[in-house]
Length: 319
Image 1 (cartoon, rainbow, N blue to C red):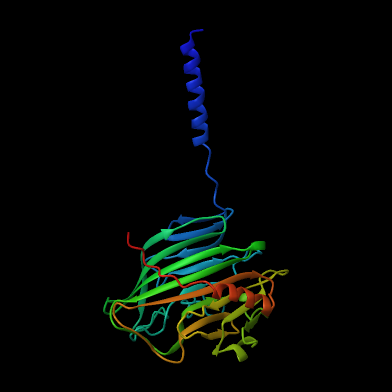
Image 2 (cartoon, rainbow, N blue to C red):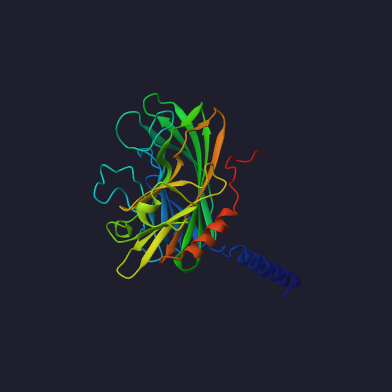
């Protein structure tokens, strides 16, 4: 056989080997962000959804639903269990405020209301232990059609052991004109728990970092965190801990809680907060989605880890 045949064969083998190396698939991320129809993004752990971000333009505000715990059921719900229409603004985990220059972004009906409208998705990531989505939203007054705030929202999911997970919610609110967040217990972040977890309907328990228990003690009290835990299946107790970051304005937050199954961190419970045109307010909240009813020391340790994190500047870095 002529020598050049051996050369050609060697070259062919080398090219085939190189192609096989290039053809090797990249590792599949354990935690994926999957866009879905109707303006939704699903966070999936090993192909199973753990939560979903809803941002359709027809909504009064974006929200996160469901919030799947280790037992495979959502720990949150939409609406009050006995008044879903009157409390249609209770959107699982949501961001809103009852008084921004006199406009309510909290309620779904009535006069002087506004809408938080999605503008665009700025960034999405995936990974084995962490993934996030950054969205830009506009807080628009219904009557004047003016944009009061431009919001950047980053939803960062961190996987934990045994089916637990942690959500870090970062907010950057930029005033497009002089803005006043009025004095109110309603806003800025809140959680509507599943009916069976509620203290009234399901016998669940509310606890806070000050050692207080249930609505009678926790209602309108300042705390680093509030935990709401209860039965999610006949055999499983699970819950969510809502955490206020120490870098937030007015920390420790006053919490608005109810035995009927909801809790919220009140940004302007004691006093109004003014934000000049062009100025930004950055905030960070944590949501610990857990199995069982962790003891206070365990939750305190989780909050301490969260407290060490830095509140980020969400604006894209200039190239």
